[in-house]
Length: 510
Image (cartoon, rainbow, N blue to C red; front, side, top):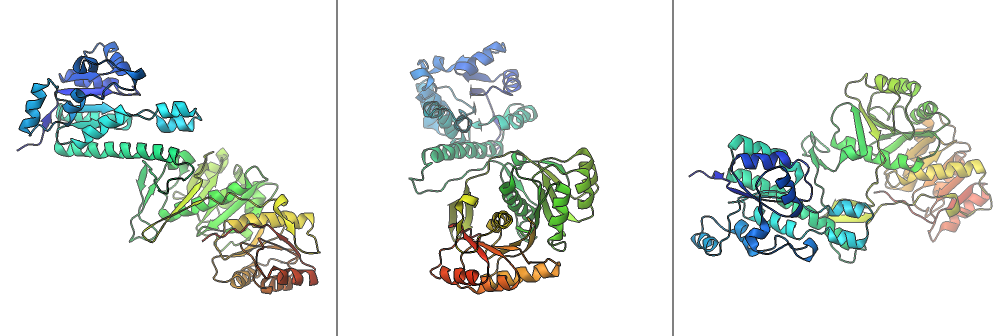
């Protein structure tokens, strides 16, 4: 037995009329009776197409300022009845309820209203009741009814009408039902999160409606998908599709470079979510050259990011390096042309976008949620712990190092000199290992650490790190403090002419 069903009637009640005209005309062409309400009804009449007001079906006007229009047994009975149920069909006839085969409804723009900064009264009025009820009813009864719940689905629906001449299969109706429940669940999640802004209800809900399947996940045997609006954050100018690992590195790069927003030209090179090179200079060209000098080996295949436009001279230098992704707020036309010289190299223009203020990661059989670490250490935060005070140049380098340290995997030590990353020890199991690794790395690239500064993401429980640093000529240290043995490190610094400042803020990054 065929599951094809010929539509004879449609209920249309939408907030946005964009893209509706060709659908209404096609329904009319197919001889499908159209029921409608309010502004949608007027829109259809203005097209010169016959429409039956819902009020004529229910014998009730729109009441309570439009809050109640379609909430009526004759509407929901027409949608929810089961055509293969003899009792349902009998009751339709008894109560003069019209069968409704298609429901086209969208929802009041709740999220847009919240984002606009509207008053609470305006926001509450954009919580849809009738629309969400119609969508749920039509989607629930997909066996007999097709539900179109979003402007985004108009084209697919229009094509379906064209291809099947007003008939739909059970698979068609079930697909559109799935889309409808995606819309309704997303809508309810947005409303819940608005009401639960202070976290009074201990529940986690997130809904992202855009997703892109990736070539694979972290490794080729893993499947990967990115859920989010990538195009809202970046304009992609060139290159291959971004991978799962690319996206993680791009995320790390964006969060790091945002620390230097509005500052002098700053260039960072990242590998495996950590900066392997970073420098701030008078020109973006010199910033790149000095960032690359921090670790030209690790830079191979890395992600590059600038806080200012990339010009021709910088692009010529970058073009000598194999790198996966280059990100900047803009590229000069000459720079863009040069960098497009490698067909797979990904070029991204970073747009002004507000990033989420919560961080989420899977853990055990659930998720961990925390506030984003928006604390950036400033001059006002610093407490001078030693008799030897840091110079202005050292203070500048200390704060520069602290920004890098905040975005480097723990345990970490960051070494900086003249606003250039000399080396960092990343993701080590002990702070001594992190420091030893960073010193060895700095030596391998011929950095002179005399007069360099050191940043630590957490306190020193023993004076061993400051002793190792002092033996290398490091002259100033920035750390959060808070150990019961802080005084041991302070005493060593006092005895060896090393300046130490404490921030009072730990920046672990696991």
